[in-house]
Length: 131
Length: 127
Image (cartoon, rainbow over all chains, first blue to last red; front, top):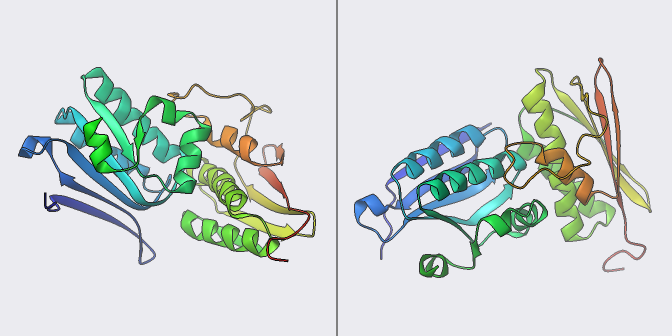
């Protein structure tokens, strides 16, 4: 499957793009799952945008929302809350959130807060899609 | 070293990581310190309108990051109780307490000073 970027958002901070969030597949467009790729660093200064984008995707009621974190170098607790919020909303509407390939710093905060027991973490998008 | 910040937390993390490695902190502990400092600095961004300042120093035993801002933390036990995993707040300072070897916190109406200590390994990697 060739993933074509449907939507991309960039936030610039002093000329450096800190966080990029792209939706590369959507259930509503006939794909088997919705795939969001988060790249860069997610912290309190860009959580609002992350939350808004996740809200938009969740509102389309996908059964499986996969977040590919392989390009995410850092995530703080406010970005984690955006994920927990998406997880809670999906859970209420019968959907599932899955995380893929967190780097060490991201895996650490997921483990510390035990969020990785609430949201399943997979090694690849294929694994996450297979559940 | 001394470093002022407003909202550029990525730059704060870069500085902390560089000094942590320079001081001889192993990679996984450097990641912990970066996370802790970023969480404290995030509170500055979230709760104050004035800039924060970061000071870093180290000797052979430990590296210390001191974060000062004009905010006030009213709960002296802030961060010492684990919030429920799906709580929509309160994880930041708890994480700080989990990953650092020692956390000192002083807060009054004038501002808050938080010192994060990380012990350095006795034998430095590669030496």
